[in-house]
Length: 166
Picture 1 (tube, rainbow, N blue to C red):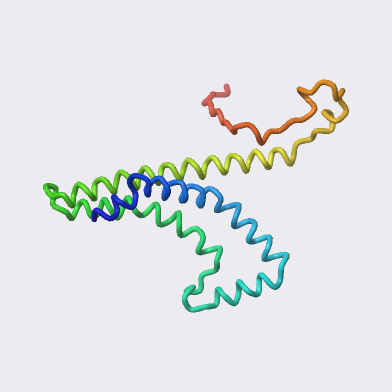
Picture 2: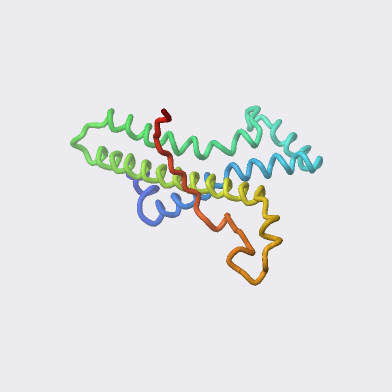
């Protein structure tokens, strides 16, 4: 069981955490690009249909396989916690499994944060695309503070307040 601690801890753990965060954060964008490419490129679509019909794919399309990475990450803490329940607490094995639980939860938290950041950035990109900048275009170009409005370089922040309307 020490293998899981070795996999999730130290330098290997950091590499795994960053790779998983990058993969999961860009997953939705990748799926959208894949959908668009399949729609536009018939040869590419035919290739994927042939590949997906392979028995090894178990009737799953590539769009169904991509989320498996994130789904697996969410299962690690649950599996390790179940292993802890079945392992005597006074053993070294238990300590390794407990450490794997902590590390897997830390990795999952980091991946979720990266995914939220990527979703927020995508929302900002969408807002930027739909901005009406016609009034800014008519302004005096010497006032550089307002000539370019780049929302994408900002962070998305929501403030929810509970107010009673009477």
